[in-house]
Each structure stands twice: as structure tokens, then as C-alpha cells.
Length: 404
Ligand code: AMP
Image (cartoon, rainbow, N blue to C red):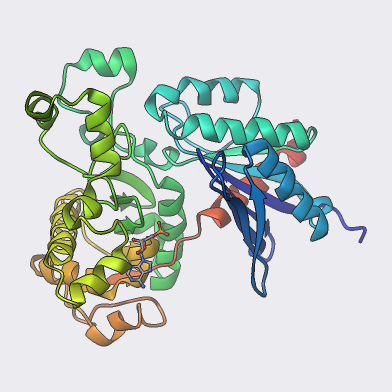
């Protein structure tokens, strides 16, 4: 094959995994998707999917570098390596520096490293992904797409914490918000689905996956969101507590002798759905258990749904009207029960569920509400595609302007 390379390799490098996808930016189809997981542990493996089926490659104990070598070998076997034009990386925290996706250079890498105190679990892994791919694709343009960038349009009244202002001035302590790449994708998709102009749209969005957040999006721009300085703030999540009384830190330290790290671990890894249910962080597992009468699973789901509805009610005050409440992410796209509970709780905002449309995860437009209701809809997110779109657009701009 002798065509100009145009495909985009999308990399989402975490502390123990590398998610990857090769996307054709013209057809917007993923040619291959996969994950190298359990890196640094025994049983590392690559699970990947082409258009046909799922495959597994055992890696024994691989670190990120070895895993990347195996991914490249796989891409070569699938005859995709020579089709690549650029690499797009998911980067979790871009601080106040990055309001858009950007071509990666030394300055950008330093800025990503400077944001590490704000995302100590994510940014070092994202940066590692960048340095490893640079090693193997020396000349290929690389682009960073930030989870935080979309939320940089929030006004100060939405992003400032009511703590001494010097913490903002000296250390940039503020609400940043995450899941921005997903919000950008679903905002465009929802407006298309509803046939409305994004420039004159008012949306509430709930991204409900293992991590959960919600956002108010006015005319295509974020004006408020629930996640904060870190992804712990806001909604109840799989293992994260979401909002709580900040004095809980001193209470738990005094009563149990926990250190700050212990409490941070409890709130990030042992709380949320898992904490209340004492069973699982996984909504599907909890719904099954709740249906069989498990009361703690029922309670965990009830707290999740109530807090979500209450938060959406609060975010609605940032908007001038509600053109649509968008449900996305693994739970938002698939759990008709969660959506039903949330919509019922939001009757005050004029929502009336269409039970049948909700059970099938939305009608053709994804709408799950009755014609005389405030609109709610399901939109399947696609963060990888958004990263591929940004990457393709940035390299095309570079080619057009002759910059490198
Ligand atoms: P994500 O992080 O977007 O992949 O979402 C993961 C979450 O989606 C987990 O809590 C899953 O249990 C949940 N999920 C996926 N499918 C379903 C389903 N059919 N019903 C309920 N929850 C689901």
C-alpha cells in the first residue's frame, strides 16, 4: 500500500495500563482498539479488538516500555504502523495553562510535568506515555488533549473555592473539572441528535462511568462542573466519595489515627458505591444484587441517584433553559434504572420519563422523555474519536501554515 499516512494513534497511558486505538479521521472509524493492562504486575496482557473480534496477548510481567513495544509489534502485524500520521495523547491535567489541545514540544512537556502536583496519579503516567512514544516515533507529531481544557471557560464564581485567595494566587488552587474531552464530544453529538444549534444551546450533561461528573454547558462552553482541583469532588462514584464535609479529615484522623495519605486512599479507593455497598464499585453488579434484595446495594444506588439528581438541579441554575439533559458514560448509556430514578427526582424541572424509550436506552435520537417533558437523552461518548479529531486538525493546521 502506498498511500499518504493519515491515521491517528490514540494513547491513554495510565499508571498500570495503556489504552490505544488507531482511528481513521476521515471515516471516524476505529481500525483497532485495545488495552495493555496490569503493567508492572504479574499477568500483564494486551486485550485488543479489530472490527471482527477480541484477542488476548499474554505479556507476563511488562512495564510500560515493554508493553508499548508489544503494541507496536501488533500494529505492525496488522499493517497499521505505516498508516500513522500522528499520535494523540490523553492528558488529564492541563492546569490553567492549556485551554485547547496542543502539539507537544519540550515546553508543553514541562508544563504537563508542572501540573503533576495537581494530578499526581495521572500526569506522570500521561507524560511517560508521551516520552515512550517519542522514543519509538521520533519524527511523528504528537498532540496532547487535556481533560481539563474544556472547563477553562468557567467563570470565577464557578471555579473559585471560598478559601483564602492566596491559595489560588500562589498554588492555583481552584476547581478545574475533568471529563472535558467527553463533554466536548457529547455536546456536539447531542445538538446534532436534537437538531439544535450548538451556539444557542443549553445543556446539562452527566458523564457517569467509574468516575462520575456533571456539567452545565451553555452555547457549547462549560460554565460549571462538579469535579474540582482533583477528580474526587462532586458526585458519588465507583470508589470515590464525591462531596463531603472537609472536617471529616480531622475527625477520622482523631478517631482512627489515620494519616492524610490513609484518608485520601479511603476517599479515593474505598468509598462511593463500593464504600456503601461493601460489595462492588460496579453499577451492573450492584443492580443485580439490589434486584436480589441486597439492601446495602439498594442503598448505594439510592445515594448515587439522589446526589446526582440534587447536583443536576443545582447545575441547572447556571443555565437559562434546558434544551437537554445528556446521560453518557458506562452507567449513563446503559443503566435505565439510574436514569429512571434521576428523572423521577427531577420532576420539579419538568422532566417526564418515557419508560419504554428509557428501557431501550433512548429512541432514535436517544431521547428518553415524553414529548411534553423537558428533554433528556442518552448519548454514547467517544473520547478516543475526539482525541483523533483534535490531533488530525492540529497536524492539518501545521501542514497548512508550514510550521513544525
Ligand atoms: P465506564 O467507566 O464508562 O466504562 O463505565 C463503567 C460503569 O458502567 C460500571 O459501573 C459499569 O457497571 C457500568 N455499566 C456498564 N454497563 C452497564 C449496564 N448495562 N447496566 C448498569 N451499569 C452498567
